[in-house]
Image (cartoon, rainbow, N blue to C red; front, side):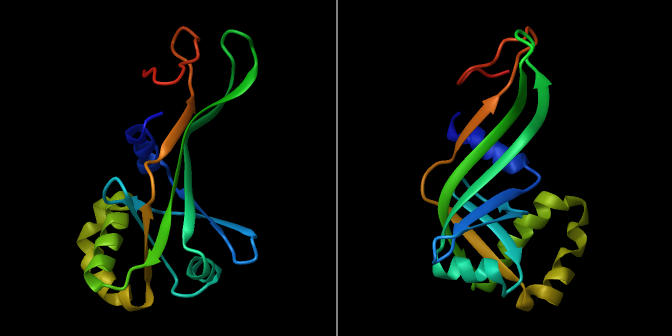
Length: 164
């Protein structure tokens, strides 16, 4: 599926898994609350210290993945056991945000995505916690891609590019 479609999946997913590789080659993945500000930029926040920050400091290359509309189904035509889903994957580089204004921008994007009804409390929360909160920016190195398995109302699988 095209990049715009994959970005929509990333925008709608309840979390995005950030996958990394440690310096010894071991994988490490964490589901995170991320928000996108443009076609290439995602933000997340967390503690200033911990394994995630250590791994990213040693190797900032990351992979983002997300799944939405995931549900088991019995194939309408052949009674096969399968799963309908929408998924997206993207590759990029993570970096610590040190500029105060950009940190606020990243935090605001996350808060607007997940708690838009509470933005009235945003400024006070930022003032209380910005110095002890890490904000990370992931810049995509290429457009994201997406996949799906979905059936139409007649029970036909909707192949590549066919929309609802």
